[in-house]
Amino acid sequence: MKNYSIWEDIADIECPELKDNKEVQVLIVGGGITGISTLIHLKKDNLKVILVERNKCGYGTTGKSTAKITYLQERIYMNLRKNLNDTQAKNYLDSQRYAVNLIKDLIVKNKIDCDLKQVPSYLFTTKEDNIKKIEEEYNFLKNNGVDVTKVTNVFFNKNVKLALKVNDTYVFHPLKYINYWKNKYKDSIYENSKLEAIKKVKGGYVCLVNGKIIKTKYLVLGMHYPYFLKPFFLPTKSYVEASYIGAKNTKGEDFSAINIDNPTISMRRDNNNFIYLFI
Ligand SMILES: Cc1cc2nc3c(=O)[nH]c(=O)nc-3n(C[C@H](O)[C@H](O)[C@H](O)COP(=O)(O)OP(=O)(O)OC[C@H]3O[C@@H](n4cnc5c(N)ncnc54)[C@H](O)[C@@H]3O)c2cc1C
Image (cartoon, rainbow, N blue to C red; front, side, top):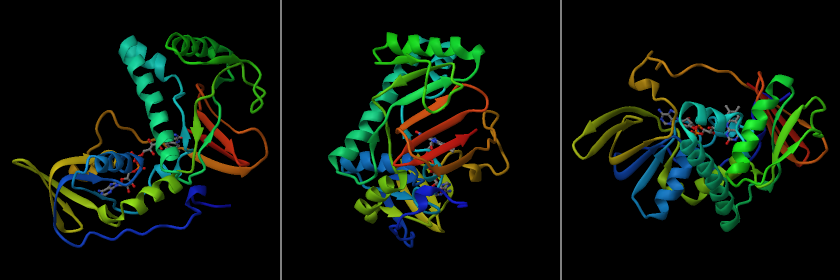
């Protein structure tokens, strides 16, 4: 049994460690999909930008995810309606559909070899009590222009009571995707380079990375919560969560799916890789 992510089974591209002081317009911290996506878009605008990653790009959460590109995300739309309002829920839906297309277009336009595949996404429940919640999510999507269908029989789980299905969603190989951009922007990425401190100064920030100084006008933290800034301080809205991911080789139709029950089960299959995740 492997105890590392299946995505990590590919040849790595190395970027250097930071060894000199630098002065830039934008410093991005973290080489996961957040940091790399920021780099891609800032590079398009010809900004003087560098990215620092304390380990290897993509080997954080991004390289351990199920790598589904979908806007079906548990009960997100009903939760946003309840806790905010209809407009914010609609804005979030639009942003997620925009992001799905953005990443797909980037892959297609740049001919990135990262196993992109269009597969249907499902949102489902195996519990009688949750059928109404799936209906609510369905109505919201339908009323907001999504081509969504309701299904009661799904091939991947015979206990499903009700599911939603959309077709304009994808899966990919996250590390092949990250490696393409690493290769393209090698001169702007420093790996094994850890942000250790940040000081706000007039006109920007002074950052300490591997003992070197980086002066920057703008700073993007794509590294989750920066615990080192306030050691031992856990904000009240943070919590620790464990998830368990596995993969096996099975044949069948390609798809991705997530439930709204407890525990959360997220899964996908493509090229005979069946990947499942319990949260
Ligand atoms: C098990 C699991 C499955 C998931 N599946 C999906 C999915 O299928 N589809 C989907 O859209 N989302 C999925 N998600 C959510 C998604 O993976 C994450 O939201 C996304 O990968 C986060 O990317 P990130 O770049 O913000 O963080 P990360 O990928 O974790 O990158 C942060 C980087 O910051 C670096 N860093 C941290 N501290 C420092 C420092 N001091 N100096 C320099 N670098 C530092 C880390 O080394 C790391 O590489 C999943 C999440 C989990 C946990």
